[in-house]
Amino acid sequence: MSWQERYADKVCTAQEAVELVQDGDLVVFALGAGGEPLNLGFALAQRMGQLRDVVVFHAVPNAPYPWFQGGGFEVRCSYVGPFDRPFAQERKVDLVPWSYGTQLRQEEGERWGAYTRPDVFLVKVSPPDEEGWCSFGHSVWYSPTCARNARTVIAEVDPSFIRTYGDNRVHVSRIARLVPVEPLDLRRVQFPPVAEEEARAAEVIGAYTSELVRDGDTIQVGVGLASQAVLEFLEGKHDLGVHSELIFTQMVELVQKGVITGARKGIHQGKVVGTCFVLWPGTERQRQAAAFMHENPTFELYDIGYIAHVRTIMAHDNFVAINSALAVDLTGQVCIDYLGPQPYSGTGGALDFCVGANFSRCGRSIHCLLSTAQGGQISRIVPQFPEGTVVSIPRNYVDIVVTEYGVARLQGKSVRQRAQELIAIAHPDFRPELRKAAQKLFWP
Image (cartoon, rainbow, N blue to C red; front, top):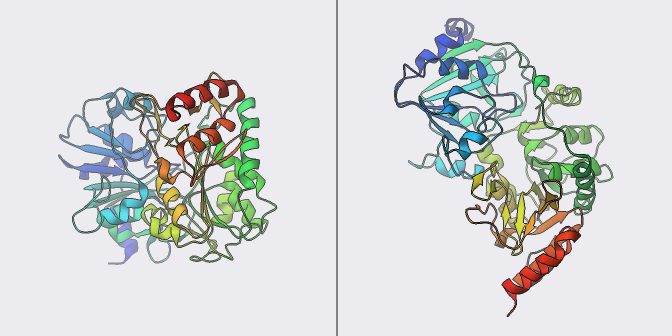
């Protein structure tokens, strides 16, 4: 039987497809950013009263599924987003601490991670090519691993999905059910506006950070207002490379302008390498960048376990990891995903990239943050973290911290020196009390 005949036999509705889910199954959703199979998710929700002992795993959910309300399925997440944050803070979601770069190690022997060996994997893919291969499109993440290891793969087929190079495809023969869907209109997604004062501060941070990037560096940029700001200040650089969890629109445009060439990369030379192109929320600028990436061999997307593995990162000389932070204490500890004891987001690959940059020859790790939060009412540089706060990046690996008030270099510095460096880039209104706290904490 040809793959075309097999394909036709597997086409069904979302409701018919999720009939393959059984009692006791671990059901893993592909990571979203426009790539989450929403139709399959809501069809599965209709079976909550029929199924028992089902566990649902999301990395970052992209919809308010009924199971977040409690009852029905057990829900696990590794990264708290806007849809599940209130429920995670009410402890209706079971959080899975997870650093992306550990995925490959978890596949060795019987050491499986929370998501790497699901019973059922729900994913969205492109239509098949002439040989029957479907692409994971712009959003790869852990899909290759799950598609390879799952008992059952169920896929939505989205005709708008681009095709990208790298390790990011699955054959029709591996998919049990195929559900044709209409393209998701990402433009309907509303993001909260950024305050003008925060936007100006982020621009200053971006300008400071760009001065730390040299010609020929390979960069990684994490999500966040402060970290992403650097992308608007790189046009004067030469021969930059990209090896990043996320590929942003500005990176694609810098390829078009000849700024990003990858000519000096140690591996994947000449390629822009990542695991996801940020198509959310689907602006015209983003859609044009995605169209440029479609079947363009310059861009390669791989499983996040490869992208964020420390061995892969440190294989690049002059690797620069640029990530956001929620808060930093005076010893240099970085918090990315908690506000006090309450979960707020997730670490993603931030720790992996920080460690990899530390071991890269001439590498640098940069953490960017606005100096204040809540409209200037509180300082993000604090003497000590509140009880219950989870430290995302240990101080031993924290290298450079940037706010709109300057750059603090922490590597090789004592605790007292670190405190002085960080106080110097804190908001001026909070420096006196930070100095007083530092004197009490670190001096006799």
